[in-house]
Length: 153
Image (cartoon, rainbow, N blue to C red; front, side):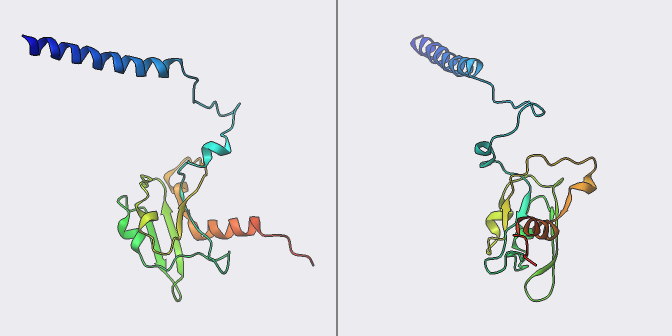
């Protein structure tokens, strides 16, 4: 009899704790951003995991750190990475299928050269799966050209 009363008291306490948490979230300000009228703050983007991108080389910013070891390909549970080895250690193609990616980060952790990182691209839009197959080497080259200082002629 005493055990049944104690179990009811513990259940009531658990219910009150759950309702207090729900109540706090009910009265807290919204975290939803209405896209056309508002934009995402840089503070929020710092922790956002977007599609993968290749990091720049230490000596040459236009080159990737990737050594074509295939560790990221083996670690990926979604099988969304394709790395084709080229001359020496540098890859000749680096294809990333974002439609298959679960953003788990296993490939980023497995990379011994530190060649992969998550981007902060929030506004990635596609109308077909083919548009989500990204060539990361071409993306690295475009980012390098965009950020390069203009040449004085």
